[in-house]
Length: 81
Image (cartoon, rainbow, N blue to C red):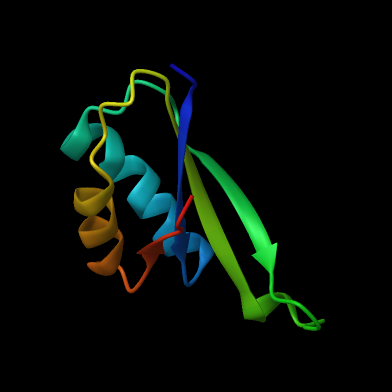
């Protein structure tokens, strides 16, 4: 079975950091989530960047629907694979 990677898209860095911290508590994510700044295409202003929280899920045990609902609590969403 190949490794599963979940990508949560969030509106700003503070929110992404909060979500990354909550992931381990709420879902027991074994891997430390990675924060990635995703500048919107054509935008020069750093304030217009979304932030991605990348969660490696080698055992494939995190539920996509639950992660999407979790991200929605923070005005974000789960990127489709």
